[in-house]
Image (cartoon, rainbow, N blue to C red; front, top):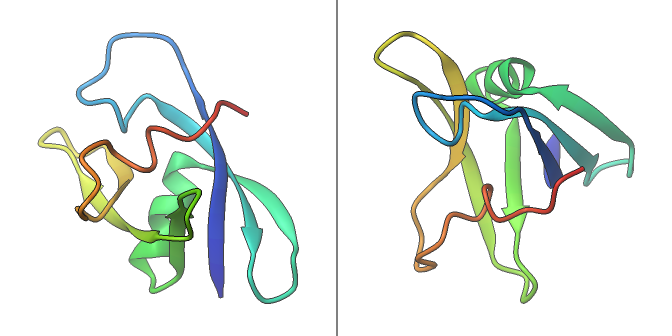
Amino acid sequence: MSVKITCIKKDNGNHENPYVAIKSMTWISEDDQKTGTSSREEMYDFVKKGGEAYVKDSVGNKAKLVAQTTDKGTKYVKTVADDVTSDNLLKLKEC
């Protein structure tokens, strides 16, 4: 299953990195147009187990998400580096 992340929800506070500030993500499935919201940890597990998640920009470019952990062991996802200088996931609107 492949899902497109449509928006993110951040919490307030001091974090190890900006990706850890993401509390949840809303997505839509390419296969059946099902929508849902997953926590940062749930999306990490989805991607880690082989699920595909991505962000699409206004011209149709896709940036895939990868599962990462901080030095303290906090799970998060981020987009793979591409030709865009700003991060695709962090630039999404707030849910």
